[in-house]
Structure formats: C-alpha cells, structure tokens
Amino acid sequence: MTADSGSTSETGSVAAGHSIFAPARPNGFSPSRSLRPSTKVLPEQARGHNRSLVLQTLYGAGEQSRADVARTTGLTRVTVSELVAQLMAEGLIVEKGLREVGGPGKPATLIDIDRGRFQIVGLDLSEYSKFRGAVLDLDGQILARAEVPLAESTGAEAAAKVIALTAELVAQATAPLLGIGVGSPGVVDPGGVVLRAPNLGWVDEPLQASIAARFGLPVVVINDANAAALAEHSFGDARGDMMLVKVGHGVGAGLLLGGSPVLGSHFAAGEIGHVVVGTDGGAECSCGKRGCLETWLATPRLDAALADSTSAQERDGILREAGVRLGITLAPVVGALNLSEIVLSGPIELLDGVLAAATIETLRARTLPEFHGDLVLRMTALGDDIVMRGAGVAVLSRQLGFS
Image 1: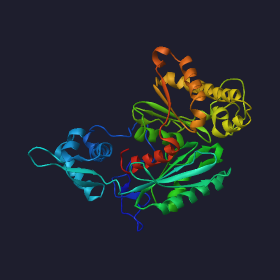
Image 2 (image 1 turned 30 degrees about the horizontal axis):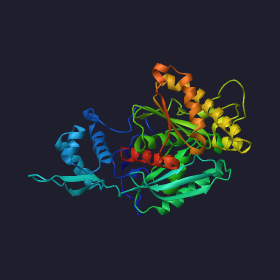
Image 3 (image 1 turned 90 degrees about the horizontal axis):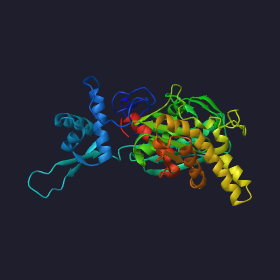
C-alpha cells in the first residue's frame, strides 16, 4: 500500500505517515486486495493502480524499456511514459542505459526500479529464545542483522526489547528507510495492535503505534505466519493458493487465496495453534485450554519432549504424534478450500522427515483422494529469515503498492 505525500526527514528516512508516494490506504491488508496488481482497472481507480502496476512489472522483470512495460501491462505507451516520468522525478525509477541490439534501428532505453533507493527494517518476534531482525534491501536481501535474547520476557519487558532491537537496526541502515515491518505472534489487527499473543503476555499491545512514535517511520505490524506467507509469495516457490504453517514460539498459519491474504472477520484467520486437537485431553496451553495444537507442536514443547526421550524410536514417536495432530488440524481446511500445497516453516531438524511424513499421510487419509491425493507438503526454502523478509514485503506493499 502507499503512504501520503510529504518529505523525507533530515536523516534521510521517510517520516512516519509521510513519504513521497501516492495517498495511503487504511492500515492492514484487505482480504479482497491482491498483493500484486496485474490488470487495468476502472478510470476512477486508475492512477494509483497503474502506478503500482508499472512498479510491479519492473520489480518482477528487472530492466525493461517503456515499450516493454506497455506491452506487459496493457497500458498505452503515453500512460506508461507519463507514469515513468513521474516515478523518475520521485527517484523510484532510473534509466539503466541502452539495450544492446544486433540489428538496425535505435536501441531502447532501459529503466528499472532504483533498488538502492531505500532500505527496510524487518523484525521476527516468532522465536521463543530471541527476537531477530535485519536491514533489507528492496529485493529482500539481508544487509545487516541483530538480535536480542528474549530470556522469557513478557508484557512490557518484551515490548521494550522490540524497541531496543529496532533502534539497533535503524542505526545500521545505510540508505533512507522505507519503513519498519514486524512479524509478531498472535492476533494482530489492521492497525498493528497485537490483540492477543499468549506466549508474550500481550493483550491489546499497541506495537505499531509504539514503534512509529519512537522512530518517526512508517510501521507495519502483522502476524508472523502471515508475514512468512508473504515472503513465500514474493521470494519463495509458491505458485498458487497456499497455506503456510509457521512453527516457533507458537503455531500459526498464513493463507493466501487468489494472491490475497485471508485475515478473517476478527483478524484471527490461521490461529490454528489454539485449536484443541482431538478429545483425549493433553497438556495445558498458554491460552488456558488443554490439548491445543501448540502443546504438541510448538518448538519449546517439542524440544522439551525430545530432550526427555531415551531412544531413537521414542524420538520418532514424539515427532510422528506431532505430525498426526497437525494433519488432523489441517484436514478440514484442506478439504474446505481444496488446497494443493501446504508449506512448513520452522526448525528443519524437527519438521522435516518423520513429522512431515506423518502430517501428509494424515491429511491424505482424512480428505477425498480424488481431490487431494496429489496434495504437496514441503518445507520452505527461505529458512530462518522468512518472517523478517515477509515483514519487508508488507512494508513494500503498503508503501509502494507492489510485492
């Protein structure tokens, strides 16, 4: 999404709520809005949409001529030329020189997004032992890193550590900051308030407002699993409708349908960690219930159970049971939405292998084989940086309108 017009601060960062870009949309991600503009729209919607369409085309394809962009987007050459001129004046697009040609005729001038124009701070609050963050470029590449130990902090103490980590990363930026993105566990509303994150002891924590007030920058706070899904969509191998299951301090899921995030009527879509799995009871969860999926699958719970195991057979049994519980939880979702792909994100040594095999076996056993027999369950290739990079995508989408 885009932010309202204004100027950069003396430090070269984009001021909170003010940037050089087009008028802002409300905070958060509308479930009906695709992350990537791909077609023309009605005249009254055209200017901002077409602007994002040009940027999205260049972001995905790299160096193109103005004529290339017009052909790809379906916009007229006049419209593209006007938009490119405006974007060049704002410093978002630069000319890269002439295209090499072997035949007669004047070579076209290539243009691209100025990928060094801005940097982004991305935070990952999903791990149970530490908060992690990075400075990223516009392509999601990590330029600098920092972390702070969580040390079982909760409430105001945990929120203070978020501010301290952000300050360290802001100081490491070497270009103007487009914004700060945060992937937080729990239920997060479109204004960046963490409505509930049991593992961090947060209830109605105004995280987005607190960070923005402290640093004077645009801030986007979203659920960590939703952030991971955005990263998989932009930088990973996702090719269609997808559910990404994020396993860390807790367990959550991010869902993309038709290229749009699904948030739910109370912003709690994907909160599968606090679904009670089965009727056989189980351990007490941080939310107060017993037998929630997190009690079987969250990283600290699995680590503790495996530490008490005395044989490889017992270890495999623990992982298999966790995989079965995950499969039981996901089967109704897969059946209802006809998903073809589930992506797992979390500790590969825990999730890949026995646990993943038990999950896919359970899913296939509990859904119709003619519709779900080819269901794919795989680990993400983005590793531990997936939430930080997804938080960067959220900033890109809000501030510049592409991802």
